[in-house]
Image (cartoon, rainbow, N blue to C red; front, top):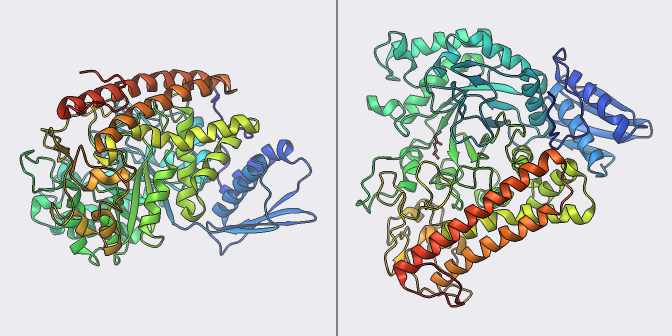
Length: 616
Ligand code: GCW
């Protein structure tokens, strides 16, 4: 059955036919489908330009509009035009765009058994029961959604390559090639995650990157893979991370490890995306010297300049792990001679499981501002997609997919308000007042979530493994390096020069800003500093009072949001999902409020200055 959720493309109420094989054909189809409703008089001409690639220009004159560019550029230009018409934006007479990043990737953490690691929108769109199993109509719809916001690479399997997903580049190449063909007309190239020890399944006795047999195995494997899928974007690798195999086993560093694979991919034009999520996940909680967020910098920065030119190091936006609030990863600022990609997580692992509303644009904007615009050359995001009726589970989580595409195309033009507004206009076509209500809810959602969950950048206080709901000491005595070290007087870890020294990994301006309590943003104060509960915040409140206030305010926001949502004229298919989820969000927020307030009250013995109910 056809998807009832048309996401931000409600004017494309018919599927792209399977026969179309080229982005220009798709562009023509989409225009012919949508223009009669959006601008019946408008003539749109397509002018393919053999020298152009992904950029496009849209020129308006008295006869109509001409979109020119390479095939993918024309497709992007067609969507741009249609979305501008649908959102009621006026396009200038002449308009050109070029993507800022050549690789704009989605990383699916889909397992071959159909389960999705950290997936909150149902099961895999690609796999079930240990084999490929998909609905081509749904995949074409995903191709269309991706192309409409300029996303061009889709890695379809989990970075934790679980059996039998290694067969993707071995026995399942014909199926993989079929999926690649489905996405090709949308300008989307496939990528696969590979297992570093893969040669050892084939009689090679080692995975040592400097062993010639290993190099030879990968060279041969890449020939076979690229024969089946000549435009495969490349491989994604999680090595020496959370028990995954990698070069450390053989005493090799990650430049040696990555370059070996990159050399096998190189003759075929493939890229090697190498993740930097490497840290000691077997730390003793008594060890107060090792500081997990320092790990990536220590493992990679000294190797700057040693990676081959088709290697891209993929670094998570924050140095910990997609927490509610983190500073920018210092590794992203310290490797000028290396190709770097920033990795975001659209899947709401720590940010509400696509039950709680959490629009990510504010986080992107803050991180990009600290990053400076020329530091990274590619973008990746962990997928929030699945086979639920609504592909992002929560209909509002689609704003994160939509916005991420715009961000990866050009972060300078992706401000939170315009992303939220354009998405809301396209998706719901509400009247102005309802649109404002929705846009404001989206823009406030991150701050609200942050208020009722772990305070001021302290990170992990979630239920272990599941990562939804409060458990203040859940990770405190574990091996993951995730400690808040709260006692009766104080909470947090000093990460300045007088403590673990983490802040010294930054360039001077950021180091000083974070190290100095008066300039460190409130939301990161407990990320960088150990503070007493009676510490007086810049606004005059004590730390403990700020914590209590935030929990009450965060919960109150959810109560109000529920009211506001109930009066929005949402389409039926979305209404049920949205109202069901906000009720669950309210229960979650209430638990967070009361569990955390009780936790801090029991430790500190300090009463709430406003006398609100805190359970003892
Ligand atoms: O945040 C952690 C997640 C793991 C994930 C890992 C990673 C794919 O809890 O589920 O594994 O990050 O990014 O590799």
